Image (cartoon, rainbow, N blue to C red):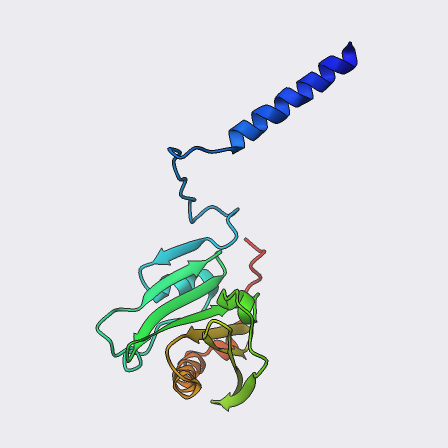
Length: 188
């Protein structure tokens, strides 16, 4: 008898949990809080590049000559450790990211497969890797000092991406990123 009650109790709990997870067509969608530290890729939009500098330690402003479009750059902090500036040049939108702890496509947020043809070009004395992804996204990666950078875009060619990357590398070096000693993100 005790075995039957235990089995019946487990079956009822299982049925209740399946009903609770089932969802209905009239259910509401919960929007997660972007400041919740439990969200893996929480994106927090910020007003200006100074807020990124306060969060990750470097200036991610975009040179006014580079961002000649009327639309102002947009700034974000991702998971409290990646700075992002999104800007437009000649109708092409670029995502510029910087982070100490991540490199490559993990930092760039790209989920498609990378083309095997990666080239390395030295820009402003910095080795910069260029690749293309299956979905047509072009990407440039480089490291200066302790900081890793990526620049991604679609609808352009590698030569154009290379010119934009070189401008950003120059700005970062002129801003002293090579000499910045960044704290570990684990220390708070």
